[in-house]
Length: 187
Image 1 (cartoon, rainbow, N blue to C red):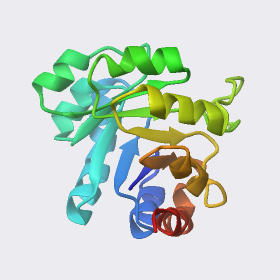
Image 2: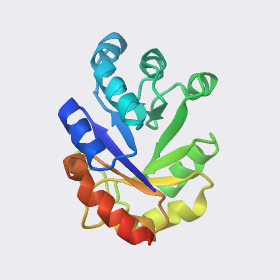
Image 3: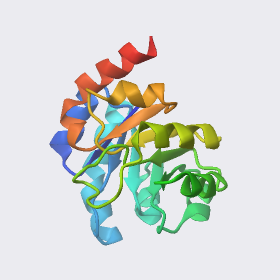
Image 4: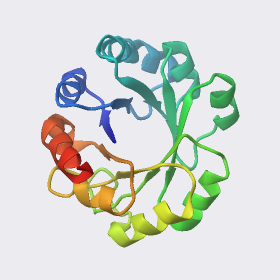
């Protein structure tokens, strides 16, 4: 079971790890690669000390330079082949079954599917809902991580729909409660 915390603040990353996050994804949008590398070093070091998988959002070059475990690429991002050459864990995003099938053809290590529920992190993007999540999970070979509006009150529903884990943004500081909900669902 994966609890993937998406963070832009080191204190939030620490709280998520303390709460049981298995993956920390550094998402610092629109930073040039050199700045992302500088900002990312403390996150990488924290994850390494904690034994948590460290993933960089959108930037393969920064992930490589930081010695990250992986990179998560959105639908418009480039670098799949470069990520493979660097042996990075590869996550891809999907919002529809069609996008999930196309992403699955790239043989990612996981798919981030969502948003499951409406979220201010992705304004104006229609929510998949649990039915849409289940359709994606049934349609692809890659493990699916649910994202978008996920918190302790609904994380277990994502597992029931077929996801192997959840990604949290706003709930990263409440990772312990999310982790507890996931563990109860897995029993």
